[in-house]
Each structure stands twice: as structure tokens, then as C-alpha cells.
Image (cartoon, rainbow, N blue to C red; front, side, top):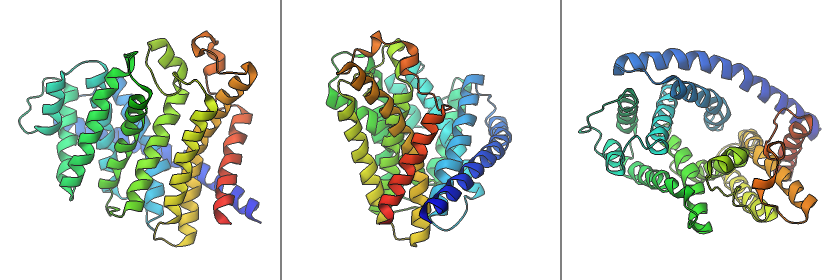
Length: 332
């Protein structure tokens, strides 16, 4: 009976996400054009595409889940703020990754926004959304603490080409960059989750998403000389245990949320489905390690060995099996 319910729930959720994503892509394109018009600026095509793609994936998979576990749907205001969030994250990534702003200018545009004089369309778009989000947030003191932690992690990420970067520093940059970025979204919800359980859910999910993204980007990062936990991996089993520890902590925080059990179980399914991508990617790297007896130098492997193919039937089945087992485990 549980297997049937789980199967029906998965199918329903996949259909919801697919339909919702197309709808949100259209809505976001219209809303972004309005924001550009208001700012008197147009994002470069690459940045615009990244904003729309990221938003249309993230909103149905993450934001809708956090709204549903609270017993409601995502509001119009939340949709707008999440779009503004991705405008900020995309443009700020470009400022840091492309070296468009000095460290002093990065600090000024983030923390002296009202005095910063924008020179480019991306700077104008960042300021517009950054100030609007900051004005919305009620707990400004805590919000600034999180933004400063994220800011430092993003600035420190420039060191990921430094061979002297320690494993501990790399872990702190990786988890911090993802965890604090996702935690910010908590402040943009209509009903701020102020308990430690809510905030830990956002934080842990962010770390898991960042590690998963790095796993999927392993080949690209190797070519670019960027150090990540996967590119520096010496033991896939050890990295897998690190990943599982975060997943276990997330499941534990979900079990402690002050919501009805039915909503909690649906939320768990949504979160474990997201975690399944990381588990599936690590399964591929652990298989490589088992084949060679030790983890080989990843730079010596062909591209095909390092690319995670989400369309393979075996990978889809792995994700479904992982999600089922985690949800089944929690129901006992």
C-alpha cells in the first residue's frame, strides 16, 4: 500500500513540476521585462537566460514545497521576490566570477547600495532587486548576518583556483556558499520561519544543492582548473558519508517541524527527491572508485565517465529508489 501511495505521489509531483515550470518560465519572462523597464536596463542574454532557468526550476521544486508544508500555495509576492533573488544571485556571481567589480566595489554595492552609482545594466538590475528585497525583510539584523556570511563565502570562492587552499577551507566555502544562499529565501517568504528547525531545513538543503551542483559540474570545473570537493576527491566513499550526514540531518529537522504529519511526509518526499540527484551522482563516482580500486586522478578520465546523464533510465530509477527508501525509513 505504501509503495502505491509513493508511486502515485511521485508521478503527481513530477507532472506538477513540469506544468508549473512552463507556466513560471512565461510569467517570469514577463515580470523580468517589467523590472528591466523600471530599472532602465536590460540584462545580457546569458544572465537573463540563467535568471529565468534558475527561477523556473527552483520555484516549483523548492519554494512551492516550503509553502505547501505551511498549508498554502506560493503567493504572487513570493514569486516576484524569488525572481528578484535570482537577479541578485546571477548578477553578483558575474561580478565576482568575471572580476567585473573590485572587492571594495562588491562591498559597496552590497552594503552601501543607496550611495553606489551603477555603471552597467547588471549593476542597475542588482541594485533594484537588492534594495527591494532588503526593504521587504522584517528581521533586518539577522538578514544582514546571513548576507554577510554569504558575501564572504562568495568572495572566498575566488580562491578555488589556489592550490594552497586547504580541504577545510574548501568545505567551508562550498557548504557556506550554498547553505547561506538558500537560507536567504526563508526571509522572502510571506510567513518567516523563525524557529531553528525551519532555518536548518533551508540551510542544510542549500549545502546539499551546492554539493550536488559541484558533482554535476566536475568535468567543467576540471577543465577550468576550479577546485571543488568532487574535483579534489580522493575517496568517493568518504565524500558520500559527508553527503549522507547532511541528508540525515535534513530528515531529522523535517521530522521536528511543527506541522501535521501528512504535510510533513509530502515535504520529506519533495526534499528527498532533490537529495536523490546528489546520491545518484555520488553513486557514479563510487562505481569509478570500485572499478580502479582507488579513486583515480579524475583528469585522466574521459569526459563520458564524469558526465552525469539524468536521462538514463538507470539514473532515473536510482533517484526514485533513493527517495522511496528515505521516505519509507522515516515512516517507520
